[in-house]
Picture 1: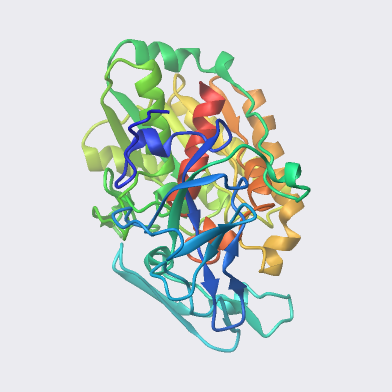
Picture 2 (picture 1 turned 180 degrees about the vertical axis):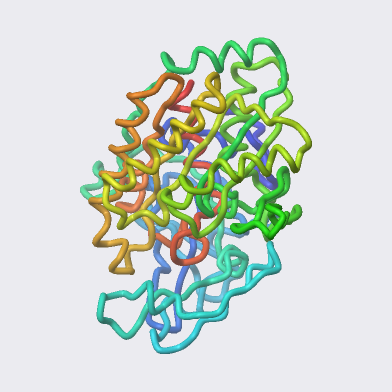
Length: 415
C-alpha cells in the first residue's frame, strides 16, 4: 500500500487494497443509526479493533470528520458523538406491513409502489417489515473510515471478523492470461440480478448500457442510459476486478463492458432469457460480441430456491455460454448475506451456502470456469458489522464497500 494513498476521491489502489490482508483497512463503510422505530447503533464495531483512525469521511469522500468532535474511538470501536457533524440515520428501518411503499430510484428515474414490507417481514406472520430505502438516501448517511489495526476481535475475547484465505483457481484461467498478454481488447460480459447490473455501486451504469426485462413487439429492449447515483462514482464489482487483473497481468488492454443483467430476476429467468438477450446485444452494438471473461451472478433473488432447481438453471446458463463462447473465462460469483432482520433471509442462510456449493460443483465440471466464494466472507463480516453498513437499500442491494469486497475476492481467487 502506498504511503501517498488518495483518500478524498475514488482511487482504485485504495478500493482494491484487500480488507483481509495487512494492517490497514481503507474506506470501510459505517452507518450510524438512531432510527425512529427504535434501533440504536451509535457505537460501531468494525472489521477489526481500531488502533488509530487515519480518516473518517462522508459518502462522497470530500468531507472529513474530526475525532473528538464528530466521533471518538472507545475500546476499539467507532462511536458517534452528539452535537457533531457526522451523519446518522434517523428514519425508519422497519414499517407497517399494512401500508404501501413508494420507492423511487433516481439513478434510473423509475419508481415502484406496492408492499415491500409485506414481503420482507421481520417475522413470517409479523406486522412490520423492512423499509425499502432508496439507495441514495441510505448512502448519504454512510461514512467511510480508514484505520490501522493490529488485532482481531478474538484477541479481545469478542466475536468478530476473522478472515480466511480465498481459494486460488489459477490453473483454470491460463487462456484468459494468454489473452491479456497480447495487449488486445478485453471484452467483459455480465449476467445476473440487480447486483450484477452495477446497482450496488455509485458509478452505476456509467461505462455500459442496460436493457429492460421484456422486449417490445419487434424484439427490441428499452435501453437504460448512463446514469449515476450519489457518491464518488466508484465502479461496479466486475469493473473493479477486471481493471485490477488487467493492471497486474495485462499490457494496457482496453476493456469493453457488455451487461445483459436485469434487476429483480432469478437464475431460472436468467436461463430462459439468456439467448434472447445475447441476440439483442449483438444487434444493439451492430456486431457479434465475443467476451473474453463472463461474470455470472444470480443469487440475491434465489435465496429460497431449491438447490437442485438453482443448479439446473445455472448449469444451463454455463452450458449456453460455453457453446457461444468456448474460449471465455466464466466467473460464477456467490452471494452476500442479506438483511437478516427479515425472516426470509434468516431462514435461508443455510440454503445460500448450499447454492454456493452448487456453483463450485458446476465450476468443477467445466473448463475455463471458476467459482468465487463470497458468501463465507460476508458470514465473517456480519460477526462484526451491521447489515446496514454494506447494504444500501436496507434489504438486499449492496453499496460501494460491498462491491469492493466482492471485487477483492474475485482478484484474490484469480491472481
